[in-house]
Length: 293
Image (cartoon, rainbow, N blue to C red; front, side):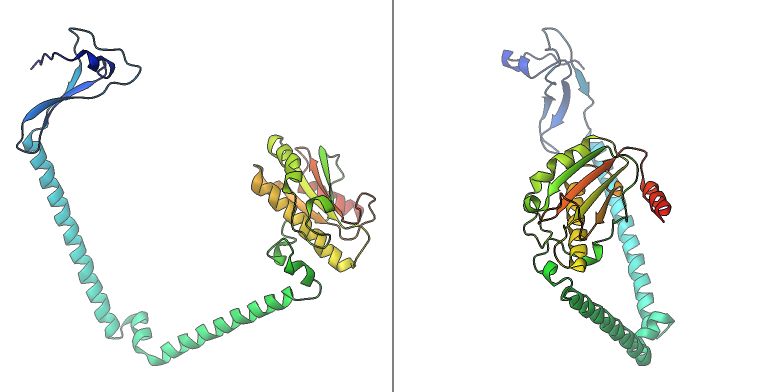
């Protein structure tokens, strides 16, 4: 069937050559009408006498057929649900009769008490562990760092730590004054993160084999406290770099030197980001450590 249509001139901007016509119905029993889809913006306009594509009308029998298919699927689903309900009833009956491990657990008071005792012991062990962690936080070595320390978990201080730098020539080194990037001289809380941006952008934009954040604290203060502080500062700087710039975090390591006689350490300590070229890896640090021994 060919339908000839006299369209308003204003429709030329929306009816294009890729528009599609279809016969639609207003409801199940309503009047039929021709629906024409909008054409795409870059398609050419339909000129006088041209033809556009069409879709076959959907007959009411097709709608009823799809409805029957949906009903059949629903009936199958209901049947599966009934079968699952029957299985649950059978399992519940066995549990009530004390059959199987779960049935014995539910019906045997002795086994129930044993399970309760084991749970109580586990809870006591967890509580004791938490007490030990709280005690560690108040240890005199860490007291000053856990109050306003700039990091959350002391157990992660050496998670990415290595013992020494590779002997290979480095690709790039960034040096930072501890007073400019940390809140106070005795903590690892960053106060000027933007200072580290240049190092982060370099790591993000250039391939590298290994990057090491090295922190030292000058020669002032207690040796053990300085060791913990520099480990924390190296960890905090590393975490900031890997979280804010795209890079392989497995290639970024830390070294906390503790008290150091380096001239550039100053009263507030210092932090260096030493970047090695591709080809330098953790094996280089292991080799240099072995040769030093």
